[in-house]
Amino acid sequence: MKSETAVTTVSLRCIEESCGARYTVTSTTTQCTCGNLLDVHYDWPELSPQAIKETWQSRRMSLDPSDLSGVWRFREMIPFLPPESKIITLREGNTPLLSAPQAAVYAGLEEIRFKHQGFNPTGSFKDNGMTTGVSQAAALGKKVVACVSTGNTSASLAAYAAYGGLQAVIFIPAGQIASGKLAQALEYGALTIQVDANFDATWKLIYHLVEEAGVYLLNSINPFRVEGQKTIVVEMLEQLGWDVPDWIVLPGGNLGNCSAFGKGLREMRQLGLIDRLPRLAVIQAEGSAPLYRLFQRAAAERKSPGEIGLRAVENPQTLATAIRIGAPLSWRKTLRELEATQGVCEAVSEQEIADAKAVIGQSGIGCEPASAATLAGIRKLAANNVIRKSDRVIAVLTGSLLKDPAYTLAYHQGTLAYPSASQQIPIQANFGNQPVSVPPDVERIKKLLARQPH
Ligand code: F0G
Image (cartoon, rainbow, N blue to C red):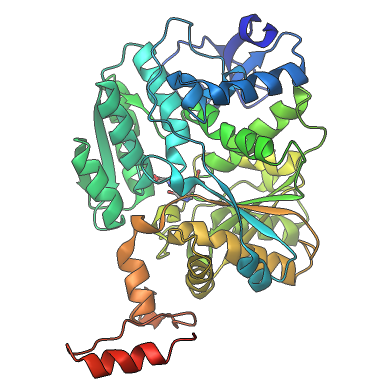
């Protein structure tokens, strides 16, 4: 098969065209000397799109670990490892596309489908990028890998490092990550360092320290993480029979994932796998929305967002702790992808996130708070006629419901509250489902059952 044997040349390139720096694929740096981020760049030989699609289909019958992975099955899109390299895979990807009529009604649309990344081995989309990132670390001979994280990256890094026989070191903002994520990192044996600071401050503190120590950084600025995450949209398009949707909607924190989606989409078009690009919509939480604010400022000043530049949110706040980031590192990459796809950025309130999450739960699907920002954002964009009623919309649910049980319990019990600077703002349990307590009394239980529809 041509797509198996064709040779692709690979390099790392600075995203800033005026810089133009290139690095070899074995470089351990995650940033250009000019301070900008790097892309993995491929010079693909002539490939037949039909042949690639057939190869990917046929691998679904294979029991080879690299074919069972929903990332490496698409390896023609990510050919950066030398052929003899070991792939560290936990069968990531392979996540379902679920139709959600109740969520569509809630958002005022005819249809919504969820691409649920919570079905991954550690319960979040980070696994798609961690199989590629940790495999690259191992190929480079690295023994220790590190990240700063709001929770999911650290859980995923801990798992893949452990599975591949590497040591993970994770830095997390103390008391600011969901319990499911911290529990995972501890269980998978990561050296877990809780820093009494938020994500942004922790990043500034450790970035140089870690690099100087020769430890390989696997935050989403690492271009090999982006390579794995871009396969989320490849798998999605395959599931859609290569019929391009109108919108792909995702939550935004550090903005690595949006950059991965845009790159994957552009490359699929370059390879002739799709003939047009869907629009990307990034949704942020209002208290933690530096990209959204940048777009607002740009509109007010009638300038492009790139000219103005991102201003960090100093003290970002949201109960969706996964996306509590004030200075997203991949904002320039994401801006590039929003420009390429005529994308948009929206911000939603804590109440909107909480209610959207409960609606996703009522469909039997469920997700963690950050993921629910998608449905809240779609509803807002539909109300403002940015997304039209008949548009075909895919929302990406980035993490599992089980990541943050405390949030879910507090919502349903009516005790969820948003800490603002001066007071606790209660969140209404508009879709709450309170547990009912009864004594061990048969008659009382019978009465309760009688109230249910038969
Ligand atoms: N959704 C979830 C569940 C996340 O964990 C994250 C990021 C995002 C959305 C946003 O993705 O950063 O690529 O824009 N979590 C990172 C972490 C920051 O450390 O786990 P992004």
